[in-house]
Length: 375
Ligand SMILES: *Cc1c(COP(=O)(O)O)cnc(C)c1O
Image (tube, rainbow, N blue to C red; front, side):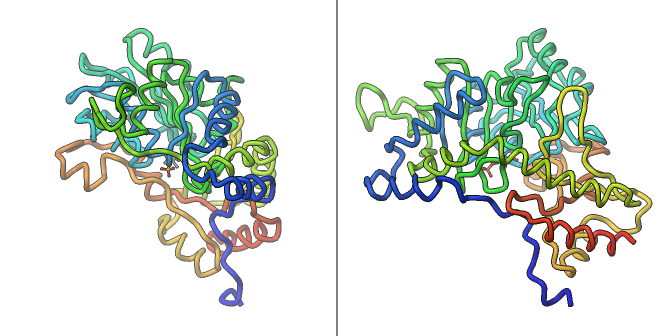
């Protein structure tokens, strides 16, 4: 009976490398705050892995975006072009500065921002483009880089879901003037909660370091010329991060195996679209195994998820578009705007259990449940 089965969790991380050993070092030495040595080590190793000069560890990926946007010195009324289909953190980092998110729809197949739709959104007030690589495939960067250069726009790159991913062989996180990552437990590398800002720009890096640490003045602690945040990462989080990063290539391979099994089992299933496995610029890094239900199927993602839950399979819905967010509508943003691709996949998209600890027998149970729901 399904009721007696344990739930297949939507995500479970793998923590059986050096995590415990490094954490014990934090406790044994008493270095548990952000002043401990793992923080620097994690920043250095992570920046190296992404091919950047600076890494600034912070307490989560949302904080990384907040600090990164603040470091760019956007003024109220400045516009930042971004995808409507993403997490709220991307847009809130913009609106908190009084700047204005200007949206583009997503691509119906890759779910990433529709690159061809960016240029028509540029105005004299546009200051930056925020690219967000989603669910496993990077945004097609070359056209964005050309536009940014031609119009002197900054690029903010949210690479939270792309740890270990490349675009045309170059690491994701190496394309933004400033790029950010998250280490939430469903990301390829986790620190429980955590984030990282990376950049090659010395001034931006210094600004982010200051903003994450309450913007203390160098000349006199507790005197402040601007307002920062306490976004510091603890030595304990960084200790886990160092251990996780040691296994990144193995984790990427594990995800590929999980996705290959899903694709093999679900490939012939009618009524659903599966993730695009590869494009001319990247192979899918398989952050989560997303499903979009065909329009001909008489139920939506919420119904499919509830049927799967009865069969003890955990799922998550897709993001909800920024232009349909009550909080932004209440602020008077995006009135009358419509982005049909994002609206469709927000209603018909969800993802299956995709964590690194997923076993073959769990995958089989998920696929059996999918067959039952989409029979
Ligand atoms: C996870 C994620 C974030 C937010 O990271 P948190 O660490 O949860 O704050 C931001 N952007 C994207 C694209 C994400 O997937």
